[in-house]
Length: 380
Image 1 (cartoon, rainbow, N blue to C red):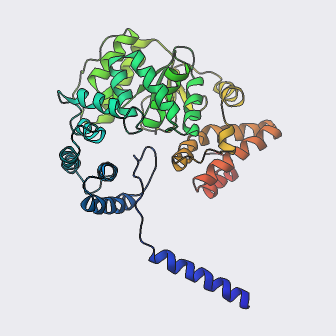
Image 2 (tube, rainbow, N blue to C red; image 1 turned 90 degrees about the horizontal axis):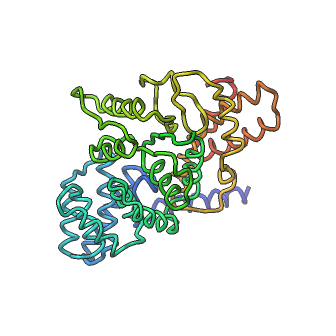
Image 3 (cartoon, one colour; image 1 turned 30 degrees about the vertical axis):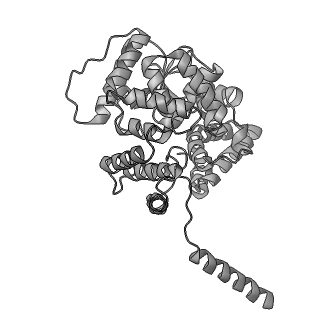
């Protein structure tokens, strides 16, 4: 009884101390790299704003203020582009000619006449700064500057900025595709790491990776039309719905490119006009107007071609661990599909192995109960 009371007392003391502990300043990353709540970004912004008031010459503190402000705006919070621009102007006043001032000046006016000058000066001053890499990737890809893109991707890979788990998903995504395929992707984590693997490691350089949001940009779209030898996209209708506009652009590429087409998994295709022509072949869907044995392709990809060891055992301890766990959840649909297939076919060893992957992935995102219910129901 005394021991129980002692333990309760210790726990109560711990909770009291935790409640009294002031929140501490932490480095603020883009939500693409480390995911936090709106409240966390607002809390960190307040802390870093206190820091810059006490020390206006603290460049690192200003970077955290800038990033926190951007993330609050991105999440739909009470910050606007004017707020972001105001931070950039203060940094330019306090740190003219520095990496920080040039980086923020580029972020402030990416389409201005001096934008490229700011970007390249920031790169010169901070060639290994993780904040700059994705901006450079977009810039070099737009201009098809192959040598510069390769050098930048080699730097980015060597920096360790991108977690191994994210690189592994992108590797598996690329090797899922047929020769000379077009692969449509959606965000930073399924686009830039794929480019890194292609340019820094020569992995599946035959695959054309097209980010569907970047295709909304006329310059980016026309450049790839030229590269693929297809007509430029001509706007025939006035689209109110941005999604319909994006679908029309992709239809243009699919019609004229005459190449195998794939979509990264994770997007909701329920309202898509092509949903009945998408076949699961791994962590991607293959577009096909003709039926084929996609289960055989799915098995081959997962059983023979994929890198999966990092899912079960991860020694990296990367800052992006929570993002990796969320990203790995993209495996759930193909893995559950295989799980039910192995169960029905009586392939016990493969069934057990697949269940291990499913269990670990579900646990790491807190969806064990939901996934177990799907398994009990025997379908999804």
